[in-house]
Length: 437
Ligand SMILES: Nc1ncnc2c1ncn2[C@@H]1O[C@H](COP(=O)(O)OP(=O)(O)OP(=O)(O)O)[C@@H](O)[C@H]1O
Ligand SMILES: [Mg+2]
Image (cartoon, rainbow, N blue to C red; front, side, top):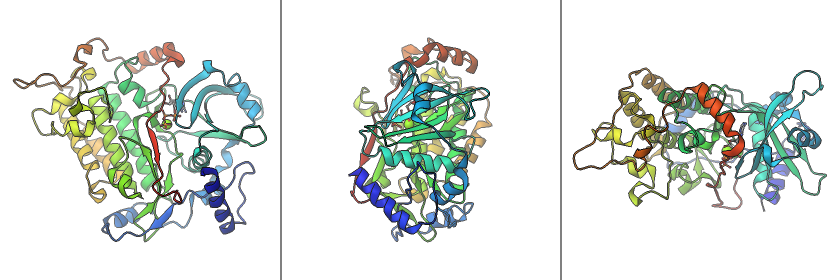
């Protein structure tokens, strides 16, 4: 079904743009969704988006921009990537997500002279129905965008002559895994407060660029801790553009799509209606802000019932209350600014506003984070209330992990090697209407 739908889309798009050539091995595909003007949303969203850096005013689509800009993408032969990964050796596998396995590899320059580069190669699982379409979306979006907080796509490989069609993506290698690994996997030392803030701000700036910083607005649609990769200095870069969509064009408030994303991160209004706006990403950002503060995942089934859903649990500890510090990650060992943490929780709360129009723009989120980062004192502390037991079931872990420097963590990561693979299990694809994308 997925493939059939893709061919239909492609033909439709080809008819529209028969004259526009694309690199021979990348079929054409328009990631533009059905656009709908909703009278149920007020004009605020439309006003805000059209005001923002021309995000929705441009006539150019992602495929057009791709044709203009993506000449730097390298087209790899399957043989080259087999060599680069020792024939996709399990020993070089560094991760696995919903779309396939990720390998560390070493590729030579195109002219085979000079130094090679260490890369990450994502090999899409040919069984996945959505795989090909998401591979195309990733090539086209990452071929167009350019920002220090977005992962760089070096090239791709597309082969149909093998018994099973092969699709691969070749990225710059991010040596420090993902934010998810560092927040939730106890094999890694705890992330210090300042690093958490740096990651939150960088990720916000990456999203703000997508929403407001280009000729076309891009809605990321899958913002979560595992898609925030970390470079050698723990600077964040967003990866995984397989679910990205162009935002609504002028005069439209949202795009209507099949509901896709990850449980625990997708905005409830989007899940309910399929109406996608940049504010859906803002919701997901709010979820990750709480994950950064608490060191807890948006959904944890092995917790007591009242603590399983992070957003429900934190409601009992409002940002301005005396109980607030009890939600803070015990692995921070109180080394955080209580004032900054309160500000960030308040910011998360507005990102999580029930009505999309009540949520801030990502550029505003980034500005608020910059303000919060100004509070440097590390005076955070748990203020136990009488008769209230600790909310942290892992409080015994305190003191064992310690706060390591970025350098020490890098050494530690080297030692961990490829053992700490995390399999993405939580992505969902809810086809609300099978004829929608
Ligand atoms: N460019 C990269 N550099 C280094 N490691 C990477 C890179 N891209 C992905 N990885 C590793 O591979 C893992 C799996 O990534 P992937 O995006 O396939 O799955 P996921 O994000 O965990 O789950 P999902 O399928 O829900 O997105 C990442 O968590 C990361 O550890
Ligand atoms: Mg991912």
